[in-house]
Length: 156
Image (cartoon, rainbow, N blue to C red; front, side, top):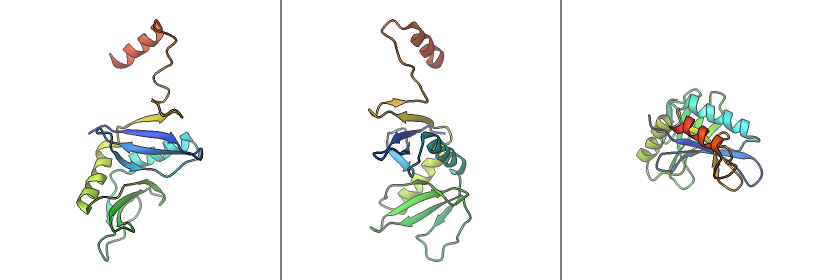
């Protein structure tokens, strides 16, 4: 599996949303907004849980309506294909950008399945710097050996 990352950030209205980002730093999908970081993390877990859901292709007339959880592939108002991932309760947990064609849209769905299960969660500070669930710890100066020990335990 390829490992992407979930990037959680605060929106201008004080709520939180996340993006699933691929290894090449391109956004695969985005979420709705949530009242708290904890609720955004619940949304992330829903994406992880449901990333292997079947696809309902609404671009085909008379397509079979599937039960939730599912991906819905549809055409936006500009006629471009997009997808949305719906959880077992019918809530939309992830949406895509507009794609040039349906084949690219289907590849986007496949990328969720290959990136989401093992993706780390990064929280963006208001200054847009990333922290990973409180990591890295604050360094108290150039000779902070506690920081160096923690770094070695985690990465070496």
